[in-house]
Each structure stands twice: as structure tokens, then as C-alpha cells.
Image 1 (cartoon, rainbow, N blue to C red):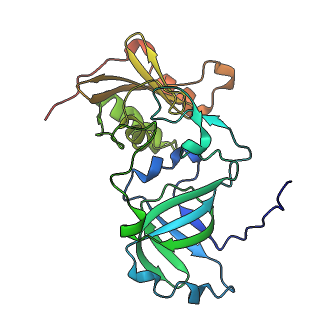
Image 2 (image 1 turned 180 degrees about the vertical axis):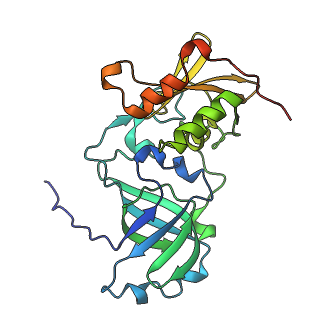
Length: 263
């Protein structure tokens, strides 16, 4: 017998600077990533949030509104033994695309909840909010299933050569993406090739793909050194103006790998 479908009514929406899915931090590893949860007026929610300001953290239950389908098996970034059943992971590609995040509650202004430590994108529908109760919601000695490693692992140090630093500043100044911030978030987890993080090995290191850009890097003693950026476009006829201008300013023959200064 098939159960009757359920109807969920969002109570608000998340407003944050993360517009695309690949911009959102993984599991809120960027602790200072701020957002505002805007609750909808006319639903008596101003009474529902009374006494909530006394809590340091809250649970936010939300809907992965950009996901149109689910996958029974996925490849998590931490998996070193292949794909896992989706219900044994924190993947957003779920039978019902429900998300759960614990965020820090900074303050409440009317129906706006200012929070920190988000991993949600702008426009995410909020379904419910609950207080985070430390004695019942945290079990530090619990087993971690297939993830029996310390998580998160100690972060890798991420450095940028002067050449890479100049290139990334130029891309950002021309209206391109903030490749530095995204690269640091991804590469802190390590250089291991992984489809989820779009890393592949090359003859002399690795390449990280971020949107249509490629960042070339090496690793030694848990220090990742980003050497240079290149465009991901191969066909000049389909290359956007920003990438054409970048390639003209950074021809392959003039690329010089600059040593990274050490403190």
C-alpha cells in the first residue's frame, strides 16, 4: 500500500550570499558564513519564536529546492571505499530532499533570524526550526559507521603563488567568481582526486575545476600550493569574453611557476 502524500508548507526562506550549489560550504565548515532566515508574515510566527533568542544554536530543517531527483547510491567526498547508500550519507540527493543544519543564532529582529555557520544557498525554503539542546543533541562518543576517521580531518594548509594570486584577483575584479575562497574551502579537505570535488591528477600535480576555471596545484607535507589558473574552455569559438581576455593576458608560453614565500 502506498501512503498518502504529505504536504509541507514553508515558514520562511534563507537569504545568504551563496547563490549556486557549489558555493555553499560543506557541512558548514565556514563557521562565519552568515545568513538571515526571513519568516513569512501573517502566520503568527512572531509568537512562535518567543523565547527562541535565549538559545545559542538552532536546528534548521529545510528543503533542497534545487534537487529534482534522488540517487540511491552516492559518492561522498570522504569515502575512500566507493559509493554508499544515500541514507548512510549526508548527501542532498535524497528520496525526500530534506536538509538539517545546526546554526548559531546571533539575534532576532522581528521575523528575521540572523544566523551564522550556514551551508544553505539563497532562497532555500525553511520548513521548521528547533532549539539545539546540547545534552540531548550531541553524542561525542558515537560511532561513525563507514566514516570511522576523524571528521573533519585536520585541514590542509592552502597557499597561492604570486602568479596565481594575481590571476585570481584579476578574475574577481572582472566580475568573475571568487575562486580563491572556493579553492580554499575545497582544498582544505585534501588533494585526493574525487568527482564530487572535481579534482583530477596530472603528470605534475593536480587540477581543481571550479565552474569553467581550472586551478593547478601541488601538495607537500599537507601544504597545498596553488600555482596558476587556466580557462577550462578548449574551443575558441565558444569561449566567453572573460576567458578570452584572461588567456590573452596569460599565454602558456609566458607562464612562470613562482616559488611560494614561506613565513
